[in-house]
Length: 305
Image (tube, rainbow, N blue to C red; front, top):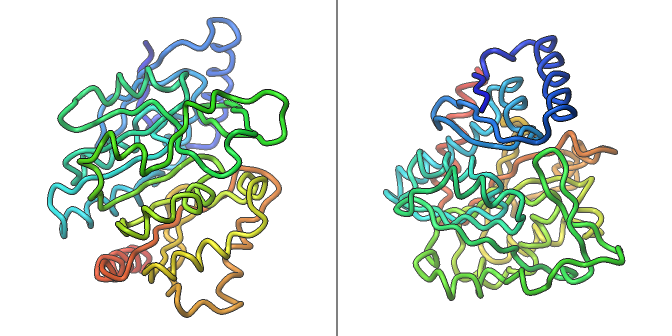
């Protein structure tokens, strides 16, 4: 296995060289397992084709927003439980567990990532792994496409994946009832975050966890015509504040969902690019956790000054 510290790839030039070397290795040797060291997480095993290592090397702030959020939740809810939908190779589950969560339910249906998830999250006291997809409306008309360490669903294809490999959050929690009181629901599914919320709004309404999601219009517009109705639905069930970060974890702004005006929605248009390389991380807080939102906003603003 190879081991590389992220500090060695910080410059753009080094990043390009590292990327070329990685793809040369893939062409000659194949997609073997490699080992990266991430400060705060330790060693993570991942496929050579996975983009996580080079991304974190180039953008040291990548994922720091989730770490800050987990610490903040832990300050109010010691040893809280979390659900990670789209757990991939387990890096985000490790970040959540390392920074305050007592245990994380890792939900990942992609067979190519599950072995790495098992390797990185082997501690059964900290992680529970469920190798399944979360169901959303339209699931049965989709197939999976994997690229560079991520997986997404494509609609309108002749082939379809096995429909038995997807369940609603409610169904999954019937088998994992200890996570019914999870205080954090993290979703990262390359365009399906909002459809998953829409299709599982009942469970979210009953439990109102803090939501950490990816806002990636380039992909989710294949499944949704408009994201606004889902945010309106969340407002209707008690979500009050929203924090927006860019794709590498840098804080952008925060807003009150109840007072959104036309101009406020313009920030979302900023991420409507013609590719998948620029997107947002969004945190949504229910009214009961407005205090955590306020504290996190203050923390982020202090960093900016």
